Length: 417
Ligand SMILES: Nc1ncnc2c1ncn2[C@@H]1O[C@H](COP(=O)(O)OP(=O)(O)O)[C@@H](O)[C@H]1O
Ligand SMILES: [Mg+2]
Image (cartoon, rainbow, N blue to C red; front, side, top):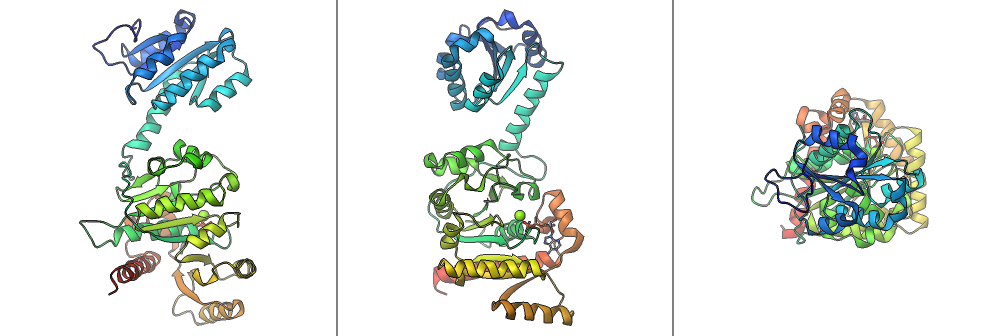
């Protein structure tokens, strides 16, 4: 054990610290730290820890184990300060708690502590926490299999096309469409020098599944971003994004189910604005439910995709959406109705039903997306876009065509050709 990280410069780089009034009260923690880290850790007294951490650069320490007992509850200010400084330095915090009341523990976790373990430590508990920290770090920063990660780079010089996707009923295939459209926009980018920058925003804050469909972690920073959008800037927005296959930037839904009204119209407008300035295309996966900020997204949209299937549920919900938009004077002209799992070209009776549905709703159904069968589910389960595992899939081809036409339209609008 390294006696005091603060006092002496050690040859072995220290990657973690215990912080306590007296670490000798936690001898099982000492043993576990030694087993996990060998010499590469130190101990800080509680009353000096904040000052010491303040002098550190971000990233020098991996985590601190803050070992507390009931006596420490009298000095919560010191403990909160340590947590605040560690958070700021991006150091993970695990509380080692002996007889700490649940109320205090809860408060410390809310302050920003990442995890806690009761003392005496259960067998292997500290190792598990360290593993969790490292996995989270890996997912956030390095490339896990299948999902390339590199830091998101802001540009601030773009004027992105905003493309929300709204499933008119649960399970109609909106998220799958949004994910694959975003990927096809990346993949069909022609300019190698300045590749098209695409961002996928998962605004289904409750059950958003873009992270599942692209095998991305749900990062804490997404929650932090949504919980306090007033302090959001380009950097914090870009840091909350993950990068799929080095190309597609994704704001996944947060790890926990959040109320859809955790953000308001102004927050959503700011997020879209930052995305617009930094990307060429911004695809937004919307929740099926209409919320206070749906209107903001509709106003920001260039094209608003409304996905439906050939059934009564979709037809009735389409009618409701149209009525709601008309009564609120919302831009109905932006809506492009897309029929998913559309009947095949040769299916005459199916085609007649599509025609009847469009007529009865008084809409054009401009986009017919074929059934991609099992391959689509397989792609979703593998966490990859369809293109990556089934390039010739009919659904993939249709979405690819759409992506190419969106590139062409945008290009001709920009250049006037
Ligand atoms: N055109 C399609 N062909 C085959 N399977 C599809 C198609 N569209 C969606 N799916 C599958 O349907 C399921 C639900 O899709 P999802 O996009 O999550 O729906 P939503 O977001 O509208 O609730 C997924 O398992 C997806 O693989
Ligand atoms: Mg969805």
